Every structure is written in structure tokens, then in C-alpha cells.
Length: 233
Image 1: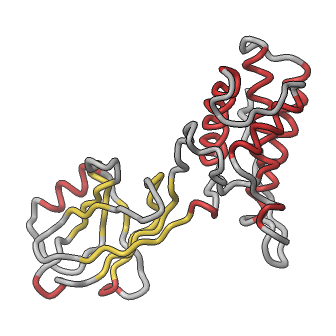
Image 2 (image 1 turned 90 degrees about the horizontal axis):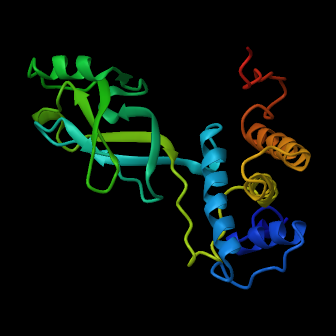
């Protein structure tokens, strides 16, 4: 099955929604004011899907080289901006990952001025590129110079602009256009929920959950049950 059966370009997805709303398909993302509104809403849909769970399409793993007497390390994967770090490991530790601690703990620990193989970590800041900077403890010493930290986590999806008409997002097209259709109906009605929006949004939520299950709970011979994410009053 070609990838086009799963993913489509930003403009193609916006065109699907335009046709569903009885609007002529746009030739570019700057064709009309409403096309640009759809692009803004499209970015909201992409962010909503990314926030809904750990999407495997956004997974990253990157390696940073330890330096003697350096405790802070920027995490800058080639794929884009980091959404969150899932796990940190160090080659000198073997298979066990480092333990995440809070800011107070990592600051307290680093005031001891201990050096050696690291076993704890925390994100202490962001650099000029918007990427997280992690602090480890103990600080790598001379024996750990050149050792390797492996950071595993999930990326933030990009913000699409009017120049991204041909760009193909990593999420399935059917989830994206269903989400955009629901968002567009709500926008068209001034933010007031309508029956059309309720129907479209229900289909979007179902498609979004099924896509999340595709690479998470729908694997292997066992059956897993996901709790309802809706709040109960």
C-alpha cells in the first residue's frame, strides 16, 4: 500500500474540508481568507492529536556525548523540537535508565559536587533554539568523558505555514480532515456547538482514538482496555 493511501499534503486535506463544506477547493493556502483560517485550525488539530497521546510517528532517539565536569546537556534531535523526554540512559550504566527527579532534588544533588556515572536527571531550562537542557547527577568525571547519553522521547509537530501546501504531515489524512472539518464547523458557527459539529466531532474523536490504538494497544495477542479519557462529574 503506498504512503499516499495513509497520508496526504496539507493542501489536499484542506481541500477535502472545503468540498465537504460546499466551498470550491483552493489552489494554494493563500487563495482566500477562509483558506488561511482553515490552515490556522489545521495547526490546532495537529497539536490536539499530538497532545492526545504518545504518537509513535513523533518518536525520537538521539545521542549526546558526555563531557568531563559538564552537568547540563541540550537535547537537540534532528527531527525537530522536543515535546517531552521519555527516558535518559547512559552507556556506562548498562541497561538501567537514569531516574527522573524534580528541580529541587537535582539542584541539591549537584551542590554535593559529585563526579562519576550519572544516575538522575531533570530538565532545568530551554536553550535559544527552544530545546530542553537536562542536568544529570553525578556530573560526568574524567572517566566518563566521551561516554554516551541516549535521550528518547517525542517531538512536537511543526506549525504549518502558507508555504507548506505540498508538505505531508506524519498523521493519517483521515484523522486530520475529520478533525479539521469539526473545527471548521465550530468556527463557522461562532464557537456555538451545533448538531453538525457534534456529529463531525464524534467521528473525529473516534478516528483519533483508533489511530492512537493502532501502534499502542492493538499489538500482540493480548487484549488491552484503555480508560475513558472524558472527565466524570
